[in-house]
Image 1 (spheres, helix red, strand yellow):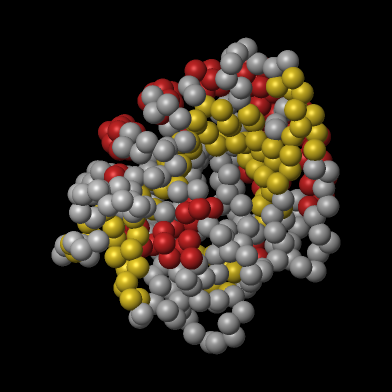
Image 2 (cartoon, one colour):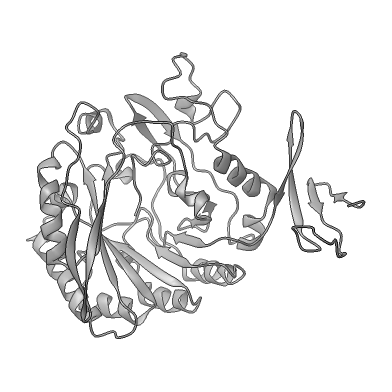
Length: 392
């Protein structure tokens, strides 16, 4: 290994020759990262496996605990040209396994969702659609089933029930359940490619008494999974609704039968962690995921795709949107392999952040989503990495 070249952007290129026994192919590109005791090399490769696309930040509901109530930006929706650029950019990733149409908006609100589903299906991977279920009528259901969608994640809990009432949606919950049941029946006709229906539920003090009913509801709509999350509070009032360590642990029925064409499988409930601990893993980085906002901005994870305040154990934290590039100016391949993005993923994998939750020092770094190591943004007190907050 006698020839290593570093360019002006600190990228190191492996020479194009055959080195017997070397773990990298000739021409492998590296990103360098300086440390006090040397330099670390990170392979810059097109290895993204999942993509989350926020086709719209608009919603047909106005849930009281939604981040849209407090965020510091105007919602919009992805243009067809931007969506095309995203899909074409994803073709560069040979390991891509799944695309999720979701984010902080309601995908069926977008007028071109049917065409988006069709175009996303041409990638050849699997497809997930998240929805609150109100607009999941027969037409939308058929468009989903014509695509390669194998998962539909349905949000249904006390928060959404309240939002149905606020929006004057007659029999909102009953409509969502009926829509989900129809989708399940229609999916049975799609032979050879099963559709899994999942449910997302936010556990709060006011919704805790509904938790034992989740298994029956999941069985009624033929859902194969239920994802339970704790509440992420965006206002001081919401802090009062958090389930904390003083509450009884969540002890829920975990399984139920699910009809899968001519077979019976078992559904599963996925519960969150209830208290802070030493274990920290970012599933977005771990699963090699990227997130594209409605305007084409690429972020490394859902919590960093918008700017908003929230409270962590009563302490204010202001999150600023973190964008590593925009598909309207750069290709997804260039954004994913950029030095900043590669180094950020490496930092999160190692979780090289300070321990801010119970540090005890009266600094304001955490309030600005920074830490005293100079990380901006900082994942030091991320509840998602703890598994306390769960994203569909």
